[in-house]
Image (cartoon, rainbow, N blue to C red; front, side, top):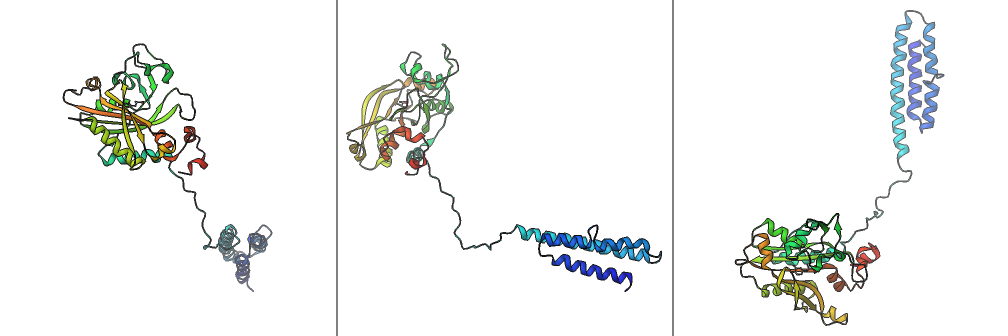
Length: 338
Ligand code: DAH
């Protein structure tokens, strides 16, 4: 056999062994046997020196070509074996049921808020928003609540930073009523908005109080607006929220930004179940002319009403929850029920 023939035949055997290697260990062994430092192919290269000048170039080329071919076969086989090793040993059963993600739910307060917004949207109210860290002008002064009014007492309010005697202090808003002012400052009448949002008071937490809670504010300004419109609107929304047997009652009250002012009581079978005839649910009234003057609306031309109610209160009655703190504990066993 000529040297060239010998190279070819060795190459064929090496290729056969490399491509047949059943796993990575067998492949490494084949590599060692043929093209490793002590492999048979390597030994062949060492013989080049002994060859005649005429033979050497052709043999050198044949050996080099064969080496390139063997290296390629080696890495192709290695890639295939590595891929095989990374696949699962057991075949995949595509008929097995998948792993489901647990579906979350909206928080009960969010559900009630969404329902309130939906009802008001039906009758043409838009949703407005304002800052939770508010200045005392928008929270109090502009709402006809002067500096000596009890609602501004330190007891009721979280101030943020200094509280200058001349006003201009910042605080966590104690009610969503501040957004009435912000909206009226920005747009001319008519206005028809509701403002769902978070409010803050220095209350100690107990079954019916929490220092953070939620309100919905409403404001309607147009020409010739009456208390009748207010009562009809409140009645419509509460019947949607709490069932068609819901009754509404207005009691005279005092708020500095409305005149006349009322508290709203409501009654239905849920209230009766709690052993009560009426539950107080909201404050409201006809917007005070001083408030209109503050925002530059002419009180001789424009009339309006406003209300504010607590969302937790409604959710508690609706779902029969007896402790407000349950809303904030984020216990999924509680939240899953609604
Ligand atoms: N801001 C009042 C509160 O937090 C609720 C309220 C009463 C809002 C009368 C109003 C209103 O807009 O007219 O208790």
